[in-house]
Length: 83
Image (tube, rainbow, N blue to C red; front, side, top):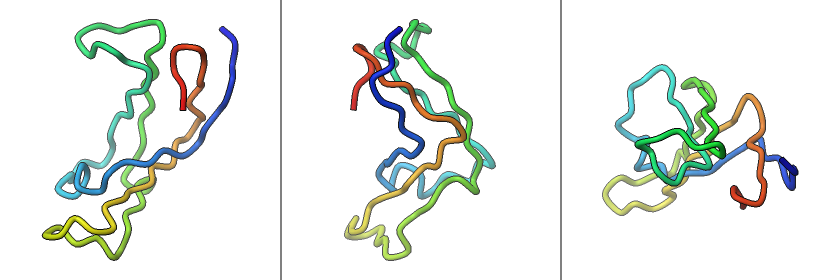
């Protein structure tokens, strides 16, 4: 596999995590079909300490709807997983 780019942080909408009370979550990248594990699928566990939410988030207006996920290891981008 040829590595094109590595990323250690990923962004998501804060509303996706706003009601999440889990101590850790699994980030799944490179999956096109979640019902099966593909050769491009990467699973990375992060803890609640690795989720940074915008303090100005408004759940009613969905403004500042951004979370940054700090990954313990980089995602590996290739010809099938790209940024």
